Amino acid sequence: MGAGWGEFLSALAIFFVSHIIFARPATRAASVAALGERGFLIAYSALSTVLFGWTIVAAGRAPYVEIWAPAPWQAWAPFLLMPVATLLACLGVGAPNPLSFGGAHPERFDPDRPGVAGIARHPILWAMALWAGAHLVPNGDLAHLVLFGGSLAFALLGMRALDARVKRRLGAAEWGRLARLTSSFPFQAWLDGRRPPYGPAPWRRLALAALIHLALLAAHPPVIGVSPWPG
Image (cartoon, rainbow, N blue to C red; front, side, top):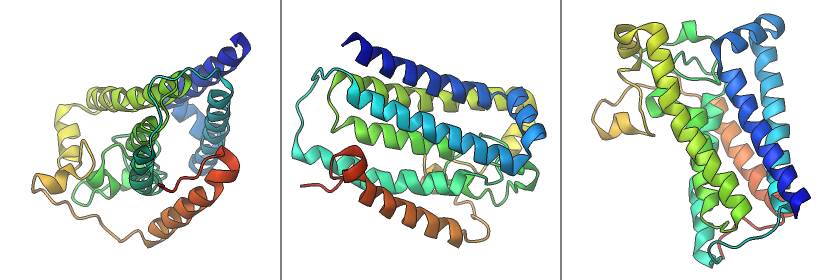
């Protein structure tokens, strides 16, 4: 049992620490200088994917300690929320966004047409939060509660920390100018009537999101061992 918990906690710590390190402006700037913007995004995405996969596998190997019992209705949470999480991730990675991380070419950001930032100012963190919250519901054992609950808290707290850091770096006036049409939570700008124009329609990213989501549905049973379909 000790070995099982040790692997899981080690994987979880390394995954979170790697994100904290590369979210720091100095570390990111040095990495981009060494690898280029595209090279950094590819390397960072590959590292995150490997560490993320290890963390999930390690959670499955940890001792099973039930916190709440499974029920068929719980599968609806990831089934309904994961398409949104996948969409936000595909729209956010590499998109111009000086207010968060995971984007590229911040100089191309147009505050009048904020793109994905108009949907969610921190699309990658919101994708992580939706993934974690959705999977927390049908996984009521201790290891997955730590994994998904910790990921959810990390994403939500990370948004507040990023807003404070970027506001200090840019100054309140410039931050307000850039963020005025963005959404703190998904689709807030539409709900409160600001309705920011997206800009050029991201058809390739929409198609990629659909393909990735279908691939995740197909890969879930053989890789995770559980069908993602409710019922």
